[in-house]
Length: 83
Image 1 (cartoon, rainbow, N blue to C red):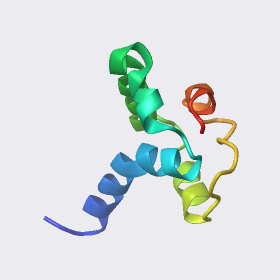
Image 2 (spheres, rainbow, N blue to C red):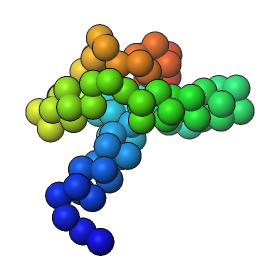
Image 3 (tube, rainbow, N blue to C red):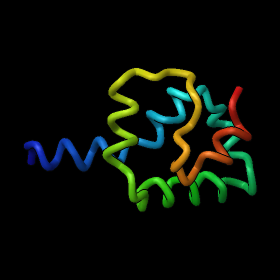
Image 4 (cartoon, rainbow, N blue to C red):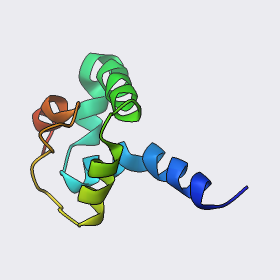
């Protein structure tokens, strides 16, 4: 199954990883917090985010190693794990 809707759903599912890369977050450090619980919570917050369009637009603009977006529900944990 392919098409624009499938592509959009897949892109949203990858969004947290793309943001982790763009912000230079140490993913291993994030996964170690509370034995992976913090990572799982961050993933859930990302999937339930009310601003996915803004997040994807920010990523599309190529803003690497910038500041996490003010409305990002994972801003604090990403800041804590930046390398």
